[in-house]
Image 1: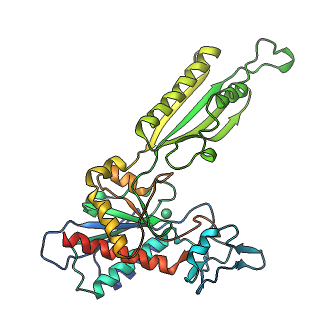
Image 2: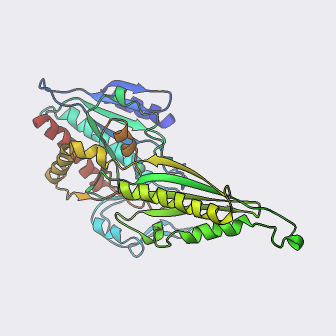
Image 3: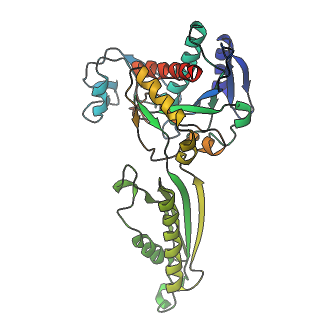
Length: 377
Ligand SMILES: [Zn+2]
């Protein structure tokens, strides 16, 4: 809220209109159209929060000008070094100006880079009335990093035909496919008896849980999959004799395969119950989010526009499936088609996070080009 309130004053100073900040921390604003022609209202969205994986308190960024391709010492006393040996992607940004951390916090380019790009694009459009555009809405929301950025997002109030989140990584990234996602919790019931008198009486639920684990293919796990390959991810194991529990997250881009994965879990739970007695294993299965592709496909022109805008800004589009979820996916299912565009940051969620200033400039240009293209149609 502190950040949102500060940002609100910045948007006011910029002369934007319809600026609202609700009690949940959702900040909206409008750049009015500068043409009379009917043009679809579109939006740009970035998130205010940073990852809880590493502290974002007292971030002290530093700019490494004209990066020369060598090691960057982030923190000498703690020997934290950002090196192309571990992060070869650094070399793609030789000669550019990199914003880096002091090695003690994350940078927060995810997603403050997105915010800066959107605000800069609005400032640019204000200063350049010769660039014709329709009504533009912008939104900054909390809670993306805990998967809830879309939960309290008032899509109706935002009032856009479609929008883009500026929240991707490297220059050129354009994403409109993400995982279908579910979570499964399986509780196994055992029977505890004094181990000295346990013969033919004790049932150790930990062994049953272990048996269940080995029934799922070891190769269909996050550490052994990539691209469009889905997985079962065992995220938690709790076990005692009397009761044990396993929690899995299930992910797949393909809807049919996703449903089959959930059926497979149900089937294995039934197998356990057939072997050890009804009620031994109890399954709780819940869907979390879905692949936005099905909501984007009917409006593919919004991807085409982003593509054309990137090319016009001198950026090579790089479409790839997200191996996770995004706010945009949930917004798409709430009726606001919302693909994701790069914000330029690299090595998110940790002390090695950095963002090249030139990447942010490119993202800003893509925003300007998109609004120009939409108005020209
Ligand atoms: Zn993000």
